[in-house]
Length: 283
Image (tube, rainbow, N blue to C red):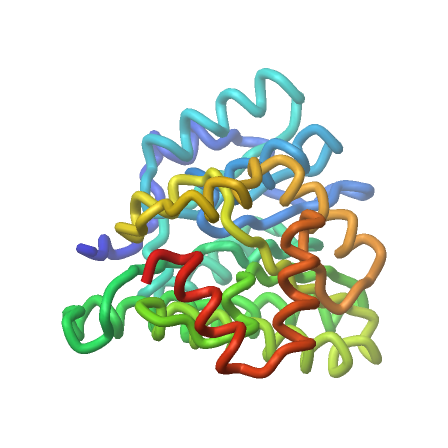
């Protein structure tokens, strides 16, 4: 993974994202989506655009963001702001927040989706890769949540969705750092759900199972027959997350098979479900 430092958008990029995004007009609702260039992030953008929300799309791959933005503007007639940001760089997150404030864009819904995973034995994996995962999945998610939640608290309204994983429920062989990182996301979301409620904010954690998002290829993950049977498409996963956030739920597991697996994990001793899931995950 070779991070690209965030830079202030050029005049060309600003023109591409649209001149009208300089103020938060009455009745306008802005949704910020991290990791928006593919997978769940792209699907969140499509579903929120269909609902008529204005969007801030954040990721490193500018070409894919711009292509998606143009498509959503054309199809749904919504405002879309594109922000190329390396979220593993904490100062870049602070700069993103400042740029949006200067443009008068107040984020009403935050979809904290950006994440990274790798499969493989812990000791055999490169230390830099493991630490990059921790940086993006834990430190960056925490920073994004913190800076935008402060604005929401001032306005006494706002919704935050944290994207965790089914692996947040257990330590999984050959996914040690990833499952531990997602366990942090789940526990953070559970704590903030109660902590932020008194300020009028909603925090919900989405725990998807295996999904057809391109994650497996990026994580160099083996697709076992069991995983192929559990595979979900992004659209129903995202729809479940949006509905749970709107309903104010603390967390949600999409898909009946995943719900059954979550119940199995809860009801069985660790040695049993860890052994079973190591097998399912191709460990």
